[in-house]
Length: 336
Image (cartoon, rainbow, N blue to C red; front, side, top):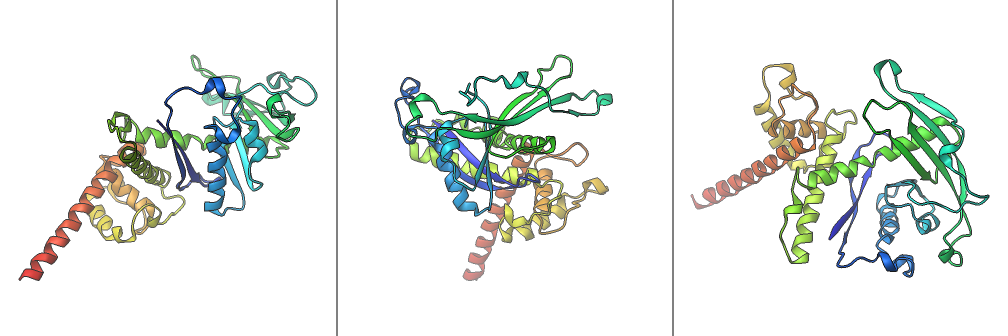
């Protein structure tokens, strides 16, 4: 069994809005041997298209960009909704209109120098348009060709002993200059948020890999609940500095605010670094409380997802206890 998740984040500032879609994939046996004989709708990879279509309906955004590492699929490029752009890591050798072409051997259009004095690498940038043809098995059922933009980014001077970064991206964006190429790369880099989500769900966080529940339905419900909780943690991580001024209600109930304010007052220390600097009612205010509950002192770095998760679970326990106390008080008053 595998879980495939799609989250919604802002293209400009990376704010996490929430989970858009999730798919459970049950794999009893391998299907690689029959992959070419099956229709696209019958393949597990069809989840990328289905999720993109559902996400577009949910968000109502004028433009939506799907960012993925495993979606270098001709059918997906051909069938994507009109209002959806794509940025994916190239994974397959393609038949090009006009003959073979090795992108890495093309002239470098530009360089992004990242402060050579500080030992940061130089990035070579190649980009342009290519027309790809479908695999032979799809020639009768898909468009005869698709025009895509390729972007090749490579570290030319990596630190000693470090494997250089090399991204080959395919996108539906029209890129005409280095600024556009770097913008696409920045958008693709936001894919790392999904890795942080799964890290929070796995061993360092909820440890869902240790589940030993045989029945599918309760196991999947528990995993889905963990995914929702991990998404909330990612929302808090993105807002821990309060730059975007997202409201508390992005990730908390409006009724949580009084308890958060009470906890904040008890967690604050005597120094400025130990005081909650964020406005009440903001998501950053709640994130500070959860970080402190999770063991963050305010004196080192920024609280990460595991620390915030620990504090968030403590907050939920405190909230539950407070609710029980209120209910017990109401019963006592009724019996007096």
